[in-house]
Length: 135
Image (cartoon, rainbow, N blue to C red):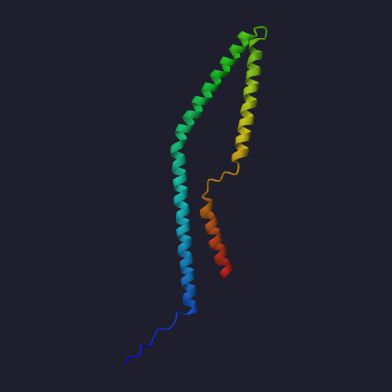
């Protein structure tokens, strides 16, 4: 009849703490790597979209200028007793006011937009907080 005795000792507290610190450092390193990958992907996507966006904005800008001229000449034809410069001032003022209101509303709506990966940053903060509270 054989008796199986365990001769190994339980790991020491120092080795357990060392393992926890090592695991924490590995986790932190992986999260920083994930943050870098997410930022690289976001910047690459925005870099690819920029040229087409600029071309679209340029074409829209030129189109708006031509539509402004068309409106001025339309109104000048409908009400010929006002000089042409007055119609340019009226149409320009209305378009400038409308554009200003539109841009202001877009900035107000998208002001809290953050291009950083918030979930990764939040996880990093939680891990650092956990680490500092454990010591």
